[in-house]
Image 1 (cartoon, chains in turn brown, orange):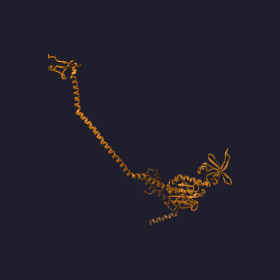
Image 2 (cartoon, rainbow over the protein chains, first blue to last red):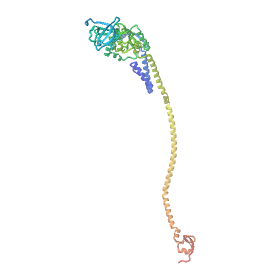
Image 3 (cartoon, chains in turn blue, cyan):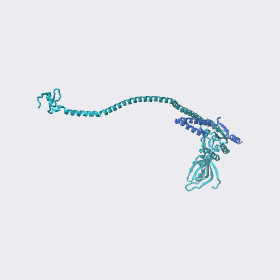
Image 4 (tube, rainbow over the protein chains, first blue to last red):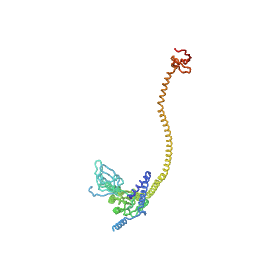
Length: 78
Length: 407
């Protein structure tokens, strides 16, 4: 896999396709190894998405978010 | 009397009846009742929900006193002629809500939010609710249970007074303006319709309907139906359900599923390699085995060739021998054959001729052979005289004879 999936949904759908293909037993050795490699990358991606923040659920107030965004925008322009 | 000032009356409807042109009823309160009538045209203009003018309904009517002079068959009577009617209290709110609902639906505002794609796993969700209250706690607990580890952006707003609707609309718009907010939950606990009325506000509902970020409403309890439920992408009965709607993916289950996916991939890779290993090993051994097989085959061929050549030589020798015999025989026959035949024929002819010349044959015809004493034929007179004694040989035997004289 060379491209990052567009979304978790896309990644999971592709992963299911890969596992179905592997389960079918019809893939040749080269294809199997390629699919396994791609599958591992997708799993890594999905796991990262599931742990998007990594530190558990985070809470922000709208005002704080807006302030954070405007300060980072200023930092970006500075 | 019909020109008297018009008044509003409020009370409970009882004894509803209809003629072809009017509806009759009594409007009752704790003090008593007043007979009322309303033309069906006016009743229709009031736009009440079907069956709203029924026994027990609280209504407000506008109109004035009326007098019916009666006739030959009918008694005169006083009554209150209502020209307007609307439901009172909660009934009134419900009627207004129903009218607004029909209007927004007719404008297609119920469909807009439902057509939006909702992310399976949003990273950030916005929530509009009261800063204090069970709804906030329940929503958080629902998200935690989902195993979700994203960010909640709170936009607190009053959820019950007359300032509530504009504040809620502003909070929703503020959240929708943040690009990372992928879904917005609007929630509060249960209450009376009047308590929840802010969530039926026309401006608020129009605002929600036009947003491009999906809004999940969880206002009141299951039996409560506010207008924001109709325009939102999803309407939930509780904050806990709203958490599930905001994060459709059960992250706990998804992690388990991913682990199974990793297991499947590992097994597939191992199985693919394992299934091919024996073949690979046999292929690796193949060249030596093939060489051995070829060696055996070569030896066999060598033996076969040798045997064949020996057999060939013997056969050739035998053949040549047979050929030589035949050739020699033919040559011998060629060399001797015609001569022999000739001789054989000559012999035959000689035999025939000989037979023809045999003396016995002549004797059989009546001749006699004269032989001397030594058996020599006597063929002349002189010899006969000289011999003196001869033997006459006939076909059937011999006799001796004496030559006496020459004649």
